Each structure stands twice: as C-alpha cells, then as structure tokens.
Image (cartoon, rainbow, N blue to C red; front, side, top):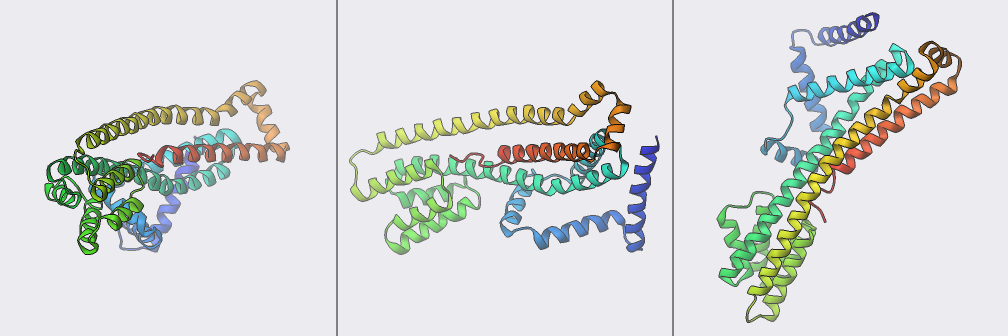
Length: 301
C-alpha cells in the first residue's frame, strides 16, 4: 500500500509541476503539443513520410493507444524492477526510462507497416505490368496502362510515372529500369525488368510463355513472403512470452533463498546489485533486438 501511495504522489507531483509551469493551458493538450513539437523537430524526414503513409492506411496508433502503451511500460517495469531491487527509487528510474522505448518501437512498427504496404504495391505493379504487356506488347504502354488503371498508389505510382517520362525523354527503357531497380531493390522487380529489357532489345516472336513463367514466379514468391509473415508473428508471440518469463526468473531465486535472505544479500553485496542491473538491461536489449528483427525487412528478399 505504501508503495502505491508513493508512486501516486510522484505522478501527482509531476502533474502539478507541469500545470503550474503552464498556467491557463490544458495540461493534456500541452503534453501532446510538446511531444508533436519534439517529433517534428528531430524525427528524420524519411520517417515522417513513412508515418504519414501509415496514418493514411489507418494503422497509426491513437493517442489513447499510446497512453495505454506508456502506462503498461511504466507499470510493468516498476513492478518487475521492484521485485529485483525492493527499492522505490530504482523502480521509478526504470519506470520512467522504459518510456524511452516507445518512440523506438513506434519507429519499428511504422517501418514494418510501410514495408508491407510497399511490397503489396510492388506485387500489384509487377502482376499488372505483365498483364498489360500481354495486350500492348510495349513496356512503356504497359506502364501507362497500369497508371491509368488506378491500381497503384504513391509513392510507387509516382515512380512508375517517372519511368514513363524517362523512357520518352531518353528513347530507351534502360535508364528507367535502373532508376526503379535502385529505388525498389526486389528480386521480382529486377527479374521482370530484365525479361522486358531482353524482349524489347532483342525481340521475341512469342513472349507469352516467358511472361507466364514470370507470373508464376511472382505468385510463388508472394506466397512465400506471406507465409514468412505468419511464421514471424507466431515466433514473435513466443519470443515475447519467453522474454518476460526471463524477467521473472528472479522470483525463483527468491523462492530458493527466501525473500528476507534475498533482501539482506541485496543490502550487503554491491556485486549482486550490479549483476541484477546487468540482467535487467541485457534482457531488455534482448527483447528490443528481437523486436527489431520482427519488424525489419518484411517482404524483402
């Protein structure tokens, strides 16, 4: 009960300081505005673009969801570290420090959502370009048909338009293919472009079989990517469960030693405290690194 009282007092104190410092303003609005100001000032431009697209897709967290996430991080870290150190001061430090992980996790999640979106757009681009080429027998006309069909969205749509403009300006598709390949470094893009380059430069009496084989390759690759996503999601749940169980291994030590003896050991041995801090930090790094693996390179080959 005393712990809960002290934690409550700490939060009230922070609230009062912010309120007094910003008399006449809504404190909630102040916190949101300050957070937005810091984000707009220091966030990389590329991430701002990514986050805007995530908002467009309707997959950005709401303010309420972020508040719940922050509360869960602070509350969870406070309880876990108190079980390690039986110190309110240390637990409060870890509790507030845990909030620093929220922007990093937001960054990873947004990159994953954006990566999944781009891969889906690349799938649409390659599949529809092959279909259009089967009708037009012209790569540039096929690109124009894909643009006019409305199946693509920015930024891929804008880059396909750049390809068309470059092709008309240069009189060849070579530079256009190099531009798109560098922008979207996917196996299916490079292979499809290589096929179209060969057909355009060397000519082919009947390219239908080659295009059909390419379509089958794309379907197989896409199926593999989606299967990988499901496997990752299952692994992610197991990984987080395992990580949190590792945090609670200290309870086993206390069960074996007894709580009183454990607390006495904490007070008498700085080395034990150092090792406990190392366990918390290493396991936290382990979890964050796992989150990075789960969220990055989704859909890439």
